[in-house]
Length: 141
Image (cartoon, rainbow, N blue to C red; front, side, top):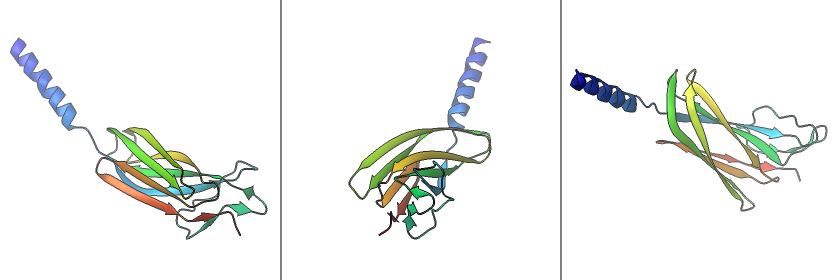
């Protein structure tokens, strides 16, 4: 009986280890944060150049970047999302964000980028999935 119980427990733990799901990065979203009001722009990730200065909304020195992840519904991902942000003024920031449980097949993790009116690059990776986002940004001129 003990041998059967031990064998069942080992099989259960082995299947749980194999059941570890993986995530993949499917895209980015970029929202400029207006300093005077705290409002955010629509998703500007597909624009050629972002102008982070507006007569009505004011100026911006930060942006929110969403990393869009896909994984299996009701799946658990124990890997961390590694994010590196590099701005043209030479500053680099690194983040390690937990992923966790996918209630549906999509999950969003976000970072705040202090761009200081400079272009920036975001490199995100989880497991074998890797994506890079390059944003051309200016405050006018």
